[in-house]
Every structure is written in C-alpha cells, then in structure tokens.
Image 1 (cartoon, rainbow, N blue to C red):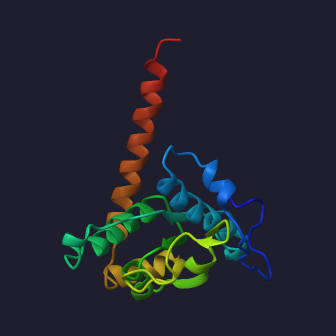
Image 2: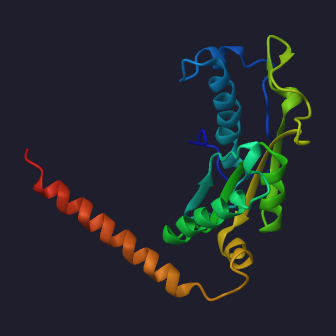
Image 3: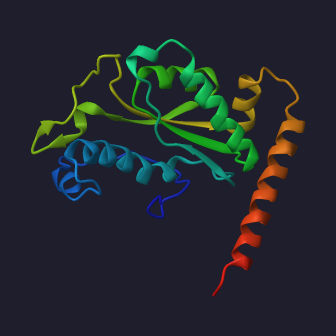
Length: 190
C-alpha cells in the first residue's frame, strides 16, 4: 500500500514531471476518472513515509463529494462524524484524509488534523501541461494530505462526551457481524 516506505525519519513527497503513462494505464475506461485516481493514488503511495511510528490501526477517508446545491447543509461534517464512528469501531488510533477541496481541508483542521504534505495541482501534468488549474474554484491549490489522532479528533467531534458506551456497542456489533459471517461460511456447501 505504501510501497514499503513507512514512518521515515525525513519524509519527502516527490512528484514526477509527467503522469501521462499512469493515466493511460489507469483502472477505468474513462480518462477523467483515471486522472483523479492517479492523483489520489500518488498521494496514497507516499503517505506511509509520513506516518508516526506508533500507528496500530489506520483509518482512511478516501473521498467525499457534495453537489453544489447541497453545500452549506452540514453534510460533510455529518460524513466525518459517521466515519469516525467506524474508526472507533475498528480501534483506529490515527486517520488520514485526502482533501481535494478547501471545505474538507478546513473541517479536518477543525477536528485537530495536521497537514503532512500537499500535492500541488500545478505539478500534476500530462505531456508538460497541467491537468487541473493551479487554483480550483473553491480556492484549493492541491491535494492536502491530513493526519490526525483519532481519539483527539473524536473528542473534538463529540465535544468531550463520554462515548465509551457507544464504542462498546459498536465493537459488540462488529463481533456479532464477524460471527454471523463465520457461521454463514460454515453453512456453505463445498
């Protein structure tokens, strides 16, 4: 996932001068989708080197988008809340987020996450030409990769309320789901 580069002493994000080959060979039959895939995948591959050495379970927010007509209704904040419920359920101690838009960047800062690197849109190129404008319509200038301590962020999100009963309930649900899956596998004919 991280190309074997995890928790390096002096991490450095490195971008290539051209991504045309990666985009052409992307997993989708759609060039636009492959551009976004390659942009995010380049960030993902290099994230490991920036991780703290005490990461045990890493929560990962890959992508979220809100249609312009629904901006300002708190949907992104709600998605973050629901995501952190899953992080609690799976005992994640850190989480990473890839912020392509300014709104997600500002929300992650509000919940205590820190930027570990940015892939500027101006450096993402095909045949020497920028794929995306240097500054998007919302003011974003690149993919900002954020990291946060899940417990700290959860405390900010829940305003310090004791969420131990919820965490216990979520972990019980997870155990029940795992048991049900195991039982279903045992019942399957060979």
